[in-house]
Length: 495
Ligand SMILES: [Zn+2]
Image (cartoon, rainbow, N blue to C red; front, side):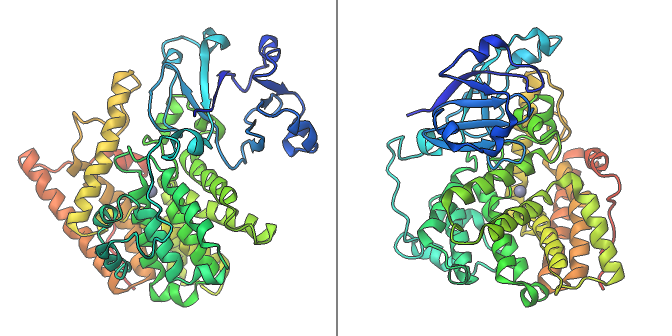
């Protein structure tokens, strides 16, 4: 069963043509912005199945289907998915970067008539209707007893060492039959006592985690559920660090784990510049700013609400949770690293971090999530190398698309000129080393030293590879310097 609507693409900053307005039954547009607050539920309920646009709010969309009213707007919980008939075909729903390539070959967008730009808008909740294994007739083993029968012995054994920095998430993913994110996060909720403390319904929790896992794109070489599981495991390791474990509240731990598990939710496998240059609807929706991170956050909020996991909490607490999860996820925008790192450095220089203060704890959790997100080079060589290959594969895949459609190949994405070693050395030098050096100043523990140790060894290994490939010369990728010129390699300053 597939639910999708044939809709014309409408530039949101232009008046809606009358012929479209008249297509009652399929689409309706409202000129009243009051609808955004749903002041009259009856009015909405009479328009079941309709998709309403309010032309007075340029980025807002109302979509209701199957009797549900869901509000999409800039501060919405879910985004609308768009794909073009002329774009990619994929078996999965989500924000795969469907593109109407006719746009690129016209001199002006105006030349592309509305009627010629028909696209199909796939709604997020196709999870149930199109993509779910159930509707595809694939039997899904009931893994509700994820702490018992459905684990094989080895996966269980691995979870006993979930706080180990050497934890092999790839092996764990195989042992759990591709359910590493669900299994690991559920286990961590249990381990941290969150289920009991927040009186969580375990079935709702499991359902939420399954939805999260399914909303990652398994076809992405890197930004998939295994990366999310890896980041969640790393976050758990940081939460256990003495400075944090002594001061964190169950609330902090709860937010940290949810943010880690959802921080790349529905990642399309291409970066923000790609979305901007292809006029992707997400770039428009979020005004070209932290486009992906905003989308991950709204997607996470959508699933939280949909699962009803925290329905027993007060509205105030739920809103606070959604907002704080957003702050954590938005901090993973690598283009903002310089700002976060400067703030972190200033606090450490002044020695004024006080973890009794909820705001300071929250800031440290942002830094911890940033570390968890880019900690691949701090893992053992065996794990780190696999991540390096996967992320490069994703970059090069984007580059291939950009070449094919003459979009201009993004930095780091050209398989003809880039190498894994160059990319990794640049990444470590300009982004990873500065961040982890400061983290080690904050938390000078055995784990921090272990991470810096692996980082040094891995960088040396990639330099060895680089020397072999280039016949002796070293060539750090300049793309990282352009990306954040203020973050320069520094000697670790351990206090
Ligand atoms: Zn990530």
